[in-house]
Amino acid sequence: MATADIIHDAVKNALIKDDWTITHDPYVIKYEEVTLFADLGAERAIAAELAGIKIIVEVKSFVGRSPVQDIKIALGQYDLYQGFLEVLAPERKLYLAISKKIYDTLFEQRAIQLIVQRYELPLLIVDIEKEEIVKWTKPPNIGS
Image 1 (tube, rainbow, N blue to C red):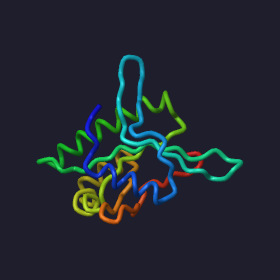
Image 2: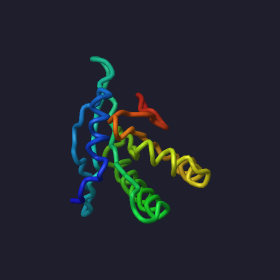
Image 3: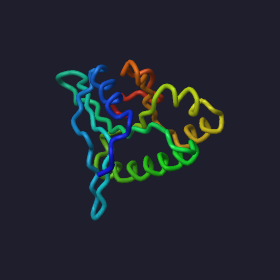
Image 4: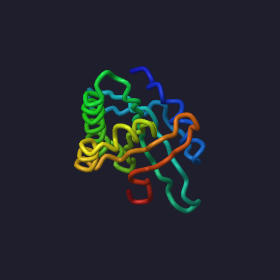
């Protein structure tokens, strides 16, 4: 199992502050002979008579020497997880969690926006210092 990302706890705390229940830390994705570990599984109740919203969150700090290399790795990891989750847990929506600082400095660049839009990458942006969710690029909701 991989080491938790440096912003893992801040993202987890932000989800808890936003009324999410952490159900898995990590969330194990096992398909046939492959076992992968996404960072977090979480649920949020909608109403007593409705099923809750379920998400999986992969946390990335993008602190490597090359931001483009970090994005290539994160995108490949996201795509791999998404492929297995479509079969194993289609009710869960996968998100990539990043810090507000990385969103503002890297993900707002036009070249990176092209990739985010092309792959319809759902992002969860977190203020790491305040441990608060700043934005969902594709907010989770019933039927998503």
